[in-house]
Image 1 (cartoon, one colour):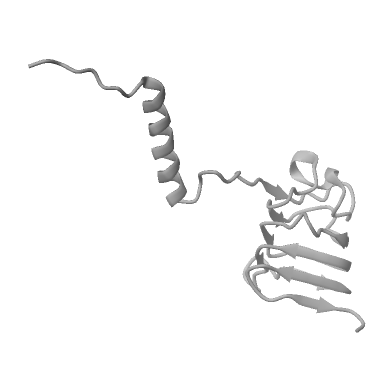
Image 2 (image 1 turned 90 degrees about the vertical axis):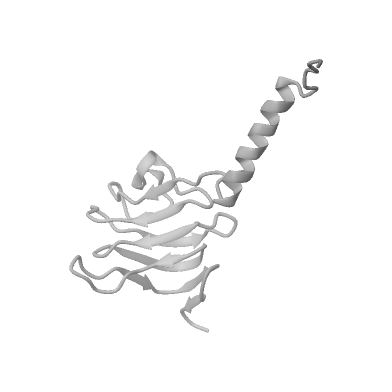
Length: 144
């Protein structure tokens, strides 16, 4: 009996293992997609949503980021503008926190504003503008 070495090189084998790992990861939704960061409102500087100094990490949330409006904060966010093309992945307002939208368009992949509980009420004040939620209804306020 004669031994015949396999024709698969180490390089091909390692690619196969990497591919198999990627396929397995794709089943749970982690392969080929960037991991989006969490952006937590700290509100230490002002009410300006677009001021990076008001966010953990010092930058305004990137497109796809999970945005959390948290308490306690010295200032609660006020949003005036348009994040079209920079849609948040998920938008969460913690009980006791308030998010005020004065004008513009706010786009998000999902929105979580819990009702009254032991921690307080999460508030989304919409003075004017529109909110577009990919995973649910859209909201509009202001003059028509």
